[in-house]
Amino acid sequence: MEHSNHTRVTEFIMQGLFDHPHHQGLFFGLFLCLYIAVVMGNSLIIVAIVSHPPLHTPMYFFIANLALVDILCTSSVVPKMLENLMQEKKTISFGGCIIQLFVLTSSLGTELLLLTVMSYDRYVAICHPLHYVKLMNKELCICLAVSVWAVGTINSFVSILLVLRLDFCRLNLIQHFFCEFPTILALSCSSTYVNEIMIFMADIFLAMGNFLLTIVSYCFIIITILKIQSSKGKQRAFSTCSSHLLVVTLYYSTIIYTYIQPTSSNSLDKNKMVAIMYTLVTPTLNPVIYSLRNKEVKVAMKRILPFSIKSNFSKCEPDYHLPCSF
Image (cartoon, rainbow, N blue to C red; front, side, top):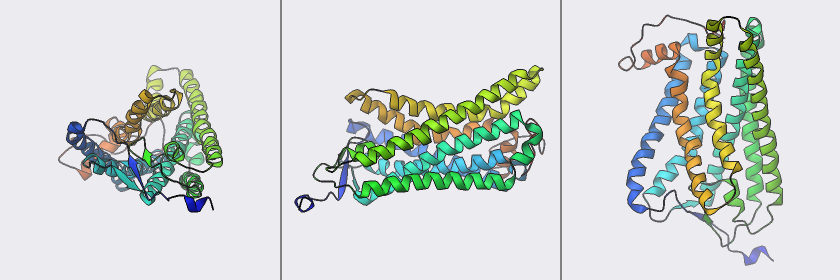
């Protein structure tokens, strides 16, 4: 009887990114360029790794997975955001919101797990270089990648099923520029207790668990690097994990900043800027971070885009005794 008195919500209204309509065209152009950079940059990384045999190593296998995750994460949010920037009424259908929630949360969860697996790869490379080939073999890498994608997808799928059991009545204003669980749960006219428990558990096991595992890996890495006698050896060892460490810092700093803020009207605007960071800016920077300082990636890029990169690097220069192939 209670359900029959409710009018089902078929679409949500987005608050949008900015309150100043005269700036919409400028930001549309900026975000469109960044989105193209994300798709092109990460696609080039994937093609370079797949087509260049010296990059067939565990580290670059996981980087290719990370590039794919970045494309999915950005594509789940930005196209709809760009569409709404050019419209007076910013809406998204209920089904579109559910799809956006699923793709975004599964890609973010998968990225958390991938960064942890990559930190373990760097731990083995630095702390156990003589056993690297045996410990990080092809079968294990594929198993880790499949597990990472499976856990991220299943976690998101369960959360979506719990959202679909909720009732959404008259309220349909999302105070964000994309669908995320906190804003959607706030609009429900039924109990969201189970959903909140699920989100809390996901935060503990996925976010905090992976963060702690990454910290532990880098503690061992730093201890091992400090034990190296020569400064050249220390520099060479650090260079093998510096790119990953920078990506981890960018990713976790935005997440930590989002969750330590007190809730206020001001923080809502700040959260939008942080969301732009992890859905658009960080995926744009990741290919740059992983390619600019790496000779083999530049060689692979030169083969794909011979007009854009000039390089006289050697054919295969492994980092810190790492193998040149799987």
